[in-house]
Image (tube, rainbow, N blue to C red; front, side, top):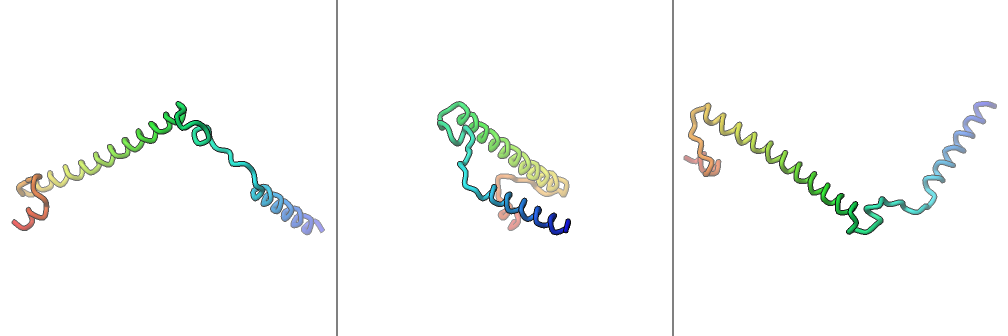
Length: 94
């Protein structure tokens, strides 16, 4: 008897939770999305996005530069001539 009541209350709780999540309700947007696009908060959010893109680009550029530095140093260690003005294809054919 107790097991049946527990299963029934579990099913009831599941159905109530399902109805609560499925019930239509107004979408609550943040002040930036819902408000004036020229408000100080929206402008600040735009600058924040641009700053984060800039930081990401700077870190990726530094990462690529470090690998180019490693390639240059390894060629110097092997005694090869380092000429960064030519492409790698042209140096292989010589």
